Image (cartoon, rainbow, N blue to C red):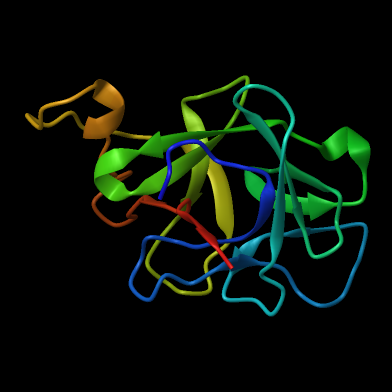
Length: 156
């Protein structure tokens, strides 16, 4: 996987077992929460700036955050500009709001039907050689709630 994300059509999948895709339902209300393993899984990723992207899912032109839930929306005011940071050791990207890089896409547990959240990214630094970006590892939010990145991007 190349570290420079290009515009195109992708599936966004979780790192949890089975790599369930980030998705929405077939119904199209004004907005809906993004969750894993739904029927609509095709994302359009469009480069907006040098490192920023617009993410669209299932005909919804905007992707935003409501009550810490990542949402697909028809409402432009709900749009968030995202940055995708490549993590070489995981061969995956961390998706974060461009103006708040300590937040990012996660799922709360290893349930393959979890909602995708925009929550605090916790990381540990290891002794692996390379830059700090290469040493990112998921960490625990609490002993009971695991914080999995929901971020590898794979061409569909």
